[in-house]
Length: 489
Image (cartoon, rainbow, N blue to C red; front, side):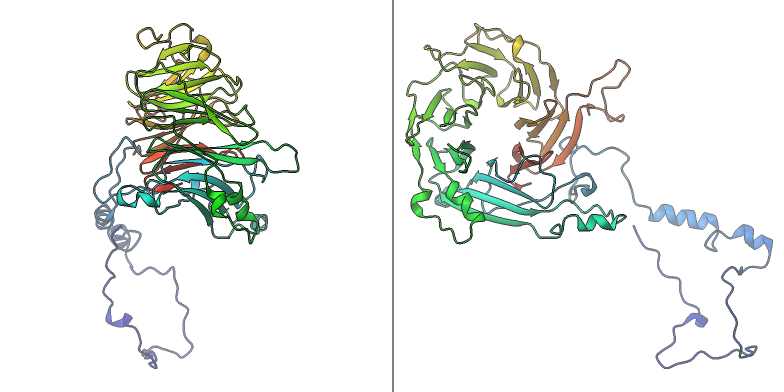
């Protein structure tokens, strides 16, 4: 807002220089007088009518206020929908966040996964600590610098919202003023990472810690499996040295002929069971054994007419999985099938289906996100078996469907403990949170607060440049971590 120039000082108001004293007037009696701050500078009622609150006419003051007022756009700005003008930028309203931190790495990491730790579940104390793994995107002549990053983020403080009413709150968490700390260990990779997923093998007895495995899909079509336990342990055990031998992969899988992005660990097989899908539409299953050997099924599951974009195991049936493809279908498979063909095929979009997420709480609910920006929730109980190709794929009605995003959906994930909450990332540089429990009455508007095109189920919009992937932290309620071209958030 423009500032008003200072009024010119009269001769009587000129500041005194150092050492000068005020000159007494002729009527100064030597005793001094108190200034009456309520004394008016005018004598007549005419002057009172003419003068405003600051001694100037109201018309003059109002004209100046209009001239100096900041121009405010009365419309609601919707990130991802409205465009910023040149020179404009968005800043988050920190009062709406409990936790907000940004992290930039040397190379972009467009895929990551959160590692389950031993610090306890349902954590609400601060500062928070997060363990994660990610793969880098160094390309061209710098491709040799690609690596698998193992990270520990600690000292993650809650947002300072300026609530100083209760001094006792300042003593609740003595370490809340600590600076965030990032510790990393790296494993060299021969190529760019397309996607990475982590899995923990349960220990044979409670005295041991679980073994944390990572599966990394590379641009060169290889899949590397690593044991990152030594790297994670080094963060919390001073003096620990990770040897080069410990950074070597447990297995290098080469059954794919083209690169891929679809990968998932089974949550129900303790030794480790891995699904991978490639751009040729082929899906392979790889099984681990107690001796540390990894055996892929050299006969792929086939049925998609185009690339397999995402894949997920059933959360409660160890032989069932589902896949999403750029052919617009989502298929359900049974690994016991001798034909290696899908049991169910459903046409869910006229464009590429980029991502899917199977609800851990309600196992008959599946969410999908497509290239046209639409995402939907499906009831698997309504899908009929028998259609095993695109021509005969059924087209059931979605339980819920939203086209709020106008660019491709890049990530979607159900809340780990609430089957009505979903996080969605999109190519419009936004990460949104949704509550499907919000229902509409006939009299209610389908817009939120009168803003057209914003459904009431939309809880939150976070702006993040080139966001590619998001995950809920399974042990910190309400905590979402995401990555994109601009780093982590």
